[in-house]
Amino acid sequence: MPLLIDGHNLIGAGVFADIDLADEDDEARLVARLRVWKSRYRGKITVVFDRGIPGGRDPRLGGAGVEVIFAAHPAEADDLIRRRIHRRTPGLILVSNDEALLREAAAYGVETWRGQEFVERFTPKNPKLEAEAEPGTEPDLQLSEQEVAEWLALFGKSKTRRRTGKRRPKSGAGSDAPAGRGRQAKARKPKDGSSGGRAPKKRKPGGGQSRDAQ
Image (cartoon, rainbow, N blue to C red; front, top):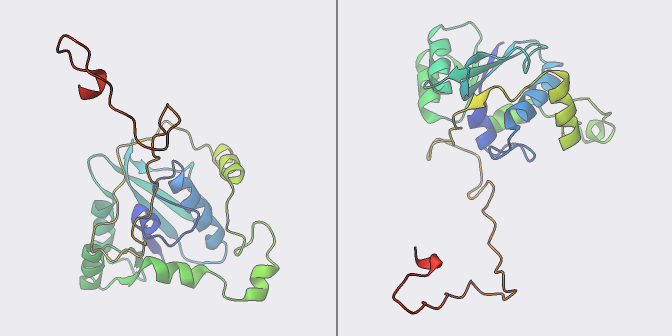
């Protein structure tokens, strides 16, 4: 049965401990994991990501039964996913937490899996199997920065494809992500070594504004 995956929606659902929308290489990390899972899944896997320049299929990032597609700006992944839903491909399964897409898929008779269900189906449940996992097998899915870099170099992922922005999962769209997930802004340290905030500069004679007030 072919799988149609809403890429950035799945990443933003918070179902992966080591993949986040804030990561520069989040798409590559997800595809690397899908390629491992594809080794034990007979159906084709297609993952659609939001806007890329240029858009379309990315054969360098995909392969081994995993098709990678970027929506061409200004289109979004949802637009491409809807077109495929409308084709009524026999056995198609949509993987997404987007409520609008889930309703549309149901209307066209397409089976749907939410992000958590998808991960649970593909994650081995045998503790012994997890303990005895060898590098590169299904349970061994924690990708280090070095492994991702080597994988990108091997499959020719270049920085020529620019992204115009990722969609965060819509509020109320059934996201499994915990509140506040994502990269937080770092607090600026005071230059004077004090623990409090920066002290306001004294206004110079002559009525001019200090640099902080501009």
